[in-house]
Length: 80
Image (cartoon, rainbow, N blue to C red; front, top):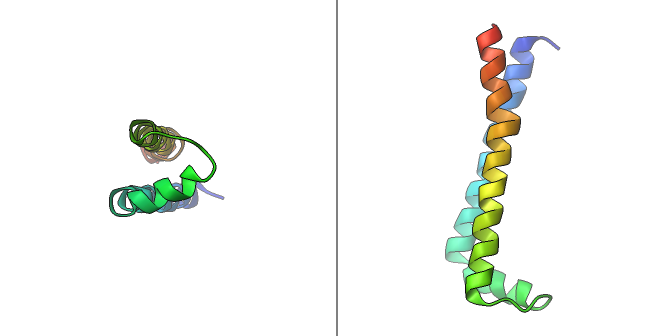
């Protein structure tokens, strides 16, 4: 695998991960009540806790995308 193929792979991974993040965000905005009902069957969470957990999860996921996809992509592009 050469650097160009690895750059393409990281770019597709980043795109795929951002699509997942956007689906999560859209589901959180438009299907929040349904999500809370599903999770409420297993956990007793207040609205504030539910929002904080999802907001924190999205933040961690986004940081993971930046560190594991974008940073290596930029480094490899500079090497080319």
